[in-house]
Length: 450
Image (cartoon, rainbow, N blue to C red):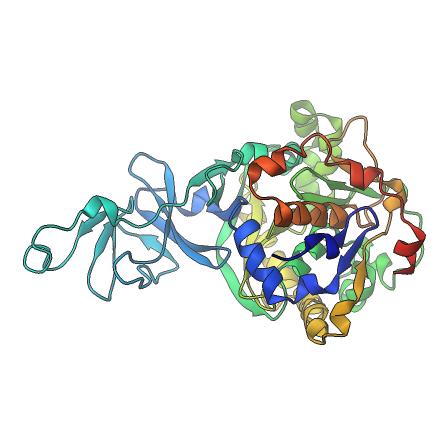
């Protein structure tokens, strides 16, 4: 087993560079992170009718996500129970059965074995069909139309897993009557560890003015002033949040639509503020008109206000498959939805202006650790640590500025907890004390030197 306490120092905001490279670390992640956590699968709008399906990944396991006759949703391992062949090769569609093209075993939308060739003449009628259906993912649930699956039957409910993050998600998932994803997803390959983009999206406002300096100048709008990471007052410009199960975000207040410099979107958002205030209160109305860089642990990320929604599907310790949808509100006009989609593709599509900037950094953050001497080093995420604390109105642990690493520290705190815990009961045992290493963790001299 990996000695996780040698990889992450939560109190001092330090991580070993091994977390971005080692095969041993990765194999343990597949079991203890991807095998235990709720993982994003699809949006209900993508599979509205009986037999509608999409294929997805849960870690490295392929699954078929299919709408059932009673309206429920199941996720089935996309592997034939005869000889293991992939059963469904389509990305999406409608099917009442899935037939393996190797030997013709056919499975119903519920995963049950429905038919097979030569059942009488070759199996002599002795095959127990009830024991050879497609394996069903233990838990599938939807939150505000966003569908997640979990392999671990002992895991908390999806709502409990989201925890305090659900309070924040309701800002845009429920504030104006719901959100949905425009698909199918764009797909691309990045040669990086899955945690690099996950940590970037969950809270890295620091890189925007440097990595994207040329791009934000060309895109124009108020955020162009960030180019070059010039010093400017950060107080009251935004904040960062981390929650119990590693979810979090950073928000630039009054930042909605600014990266795209999209007046129509901003006008739409601000017109909704009175209704959101009445429904959800003043704080969430303020967050509703912000720009969020956010993550649902472990590998689901989104930018609200730029409206891209991503899953980083791992393909080993140093490669991922990126799936990208556009996030829209149901209440938007068709014209505004189309404009949001166009702008999201322009910036964070497969060949997007900002996506290209990020991709290069994400790959080199991973591959620089190929060298064994480099992997003996550590990485620093101490920014803003002195200001982390609780807030009288906001749940979670709060960092006072949007440029900080509060959500980084929260991400790796939960990652380390899962990697060490024997089961969910061991995780639950920390429910009352999880904030302590984040709020009480003073940066030591050794930490600063590292």
